[in-house]
Image (cartoon, rainbow, N blue to C red; front, side, top):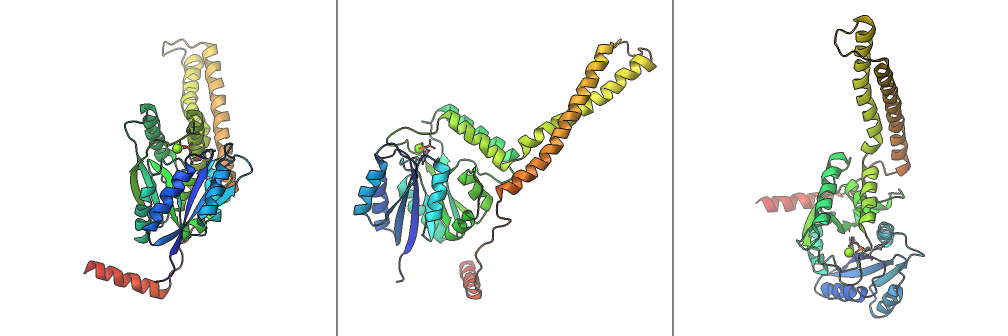
Length: 330
Ligand code: UDP
Ligand code: MG
């Protein structure tokens, strides 16, 4: 048999010293029964506990463990990116370090990858144990996001994902600074498959993402994947113009030309108010116009690759695939 393929497991960690050895053991055990080698990349995101020492101790015992140490806390998104940049495997699996992403699913991810999926996404099923507010807010988030976003976002998709080498290479081309990793991966496309799982509660320690942070993250997702908030002012302006314009004309005619046929007896102040409203409408719609240009600048500055191509296949590979399909059909 040829050499075993290498799989990178990327784990962003911040203050997870109690969870790290448990995760490492679980991974090591899983891979003994799998036809792959692994490298377990811990990206230490400025931990304040002894996570780094714990990882270093593990490195002595397990050749597969690698450590990337951030100089300070840069956030999970940055940590995952760093892991993907450093990954050497044929595929990379991203998972949380708090055992909320069950390691026993790794074989499912790998199986789907072997079947040809280039991105495998873990879909989280919310258990009843989760607070109703968290379940509700998550549902609302995906509902709104689905409506306003320019890229398709799958509900309940988590960061527990597998990326094929081709997807990793494409990901590396992204240079935008404020990033939501899963949004970027969704943007990439590629053929996908899903693994459903119920997240277990965090093993040790407490979650870093408070509601406030989650809200910020949600807001950021909106602005990074949709221009709707930016266009909102413009739409509002146009709406105001459409209402106040005809209303102003109507009041003017009624007051000065038709001498109060409507019976409303409009005052001069009413006319003034409508004129002011009209001007506000003009200002807002101009703002909308300006924001269209800002949207373009935003798009340029994000500097995403123009397109993402799949790896080129040789003639033999295509022939092989066709053969397989024929065999499958028969
Ligand atoms: N994490 C990180 N940097 C941070 C916050 C969290 O690398 O600033 C890691 C954390 O160690 C864990 C993962 O990201 O491995 C998910 O974090 P957490 O469990 O706090 O979030 P939640 O499960 O609530 O999404
Ligand atoms: Mg967690």
